[in-house]
Image (cartoon, rainbow, N blue to C red):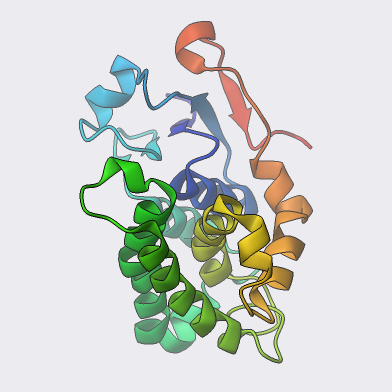
Length: 217
């Protein structure tokens, strides 16, 4: 392979954060946009668990966890110092991302997709997710981003999940009493950084078209 291959699904929050890290690091790969209900055999051969993102490196190494993809990209090149929170306060940085990926994601899924689970009250899980957002709100008090004055891996890792939570019922979210998270969310979703990784591409399995990511835009 002349370039790494990234299997991605545009709306998946795990894939979003991987794409952001790849884009900011200046790495270039071949993007294969998939549908989760129609996974290509090539992706499943590389990663049988069938989730995105999946990054197949030029030497055949497969990275199929989004945080591993992020760290790989930023360890190649980190021009905006996204890894600074890990270098300065690794334990607390990893703990916050773990809380996002664990309890908050569990509440998010059961709030947004409550009909997929038995004996689940969506509002209970909405309230559970709100507690995590309150902790982010406190972190953002007096600072622009989650780790200070610059966008870092903390923001990139957590932003797509807060986006999904907010979009479940944006009217409720805007009236939930959060002072800083809505501003942080909206400003970052409107940024060129985020827009660049949210371009729409046709399903690779259907077209077979190889797409450069990130593009020249």
